[in-house]
Image 1 (tube, rainbow, N blue to C red):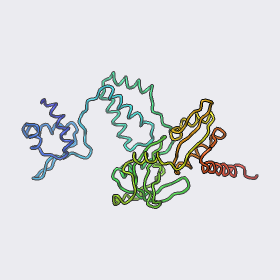
Image 2 (cartoon, rainbow, N blue to C red):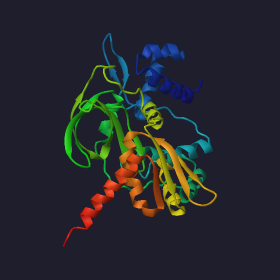
Image 3 (spheres, rainbow, N blue to C red):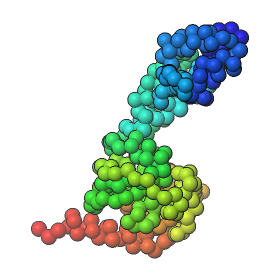
Length: 317
């Protein structure tokens, strides 16, 4: 094994162990302790985050911010990584925003010039566009870390109608249409609610809680899959051609959209109770281009909203 190969193998081994002694590495690589010490010194000079402790229980340790060993990528794999980063660039907030920018710069700078040029050309032709919703989420990373640690949090939350303090147990986070959402078990409501992360104004306290005490899905994916199959209401909405075009841009309702050979289309799907208010707000601006056939609760909700608008804009002079 050459020295360069040994250093790479050593980086991989050290990252796996995190705590080790010079003797352990010398035995593993079949070299002297003096050689291992020289290798470790070279790794430290290259920026590998090591620190040592003397004494009987001493040895080397890896700092929290480890440097990962080099990985060889094919040209298409390099482009795939670039597109993964590109898909995130239009989100105003990310849990590791600065790190995302840093890793993309490092990655591009290490590529051969011809591949850099190839990626630049792709960048001019393909973009993962996300609407700019102008909603900053300064507590996104904090909520992400709370969810990762399976902790609860007492937050100050500003909803559409009021501001309140509540304790929630995050299931995880997901992004949709440029906004971040945090489904969480609300201890006051005793059920799972969806909180917009940009509306979380302050984290007052982070709390540990007994595992298994609350009915919480094991993962965010499990939550989203269960949400999709809830069948509280049969939704049927008749659409004109204009209504079809407007509906095609909304991922939730587009799942149940069917165009008709005679023109127009119909939305025929199941939705859960929590989506009823959102559906009414979304369909209302369609005007005559949408007609709610089912459920009756949705048609009544839209009528109430129209009545409130009429009172607001048709006040006696």
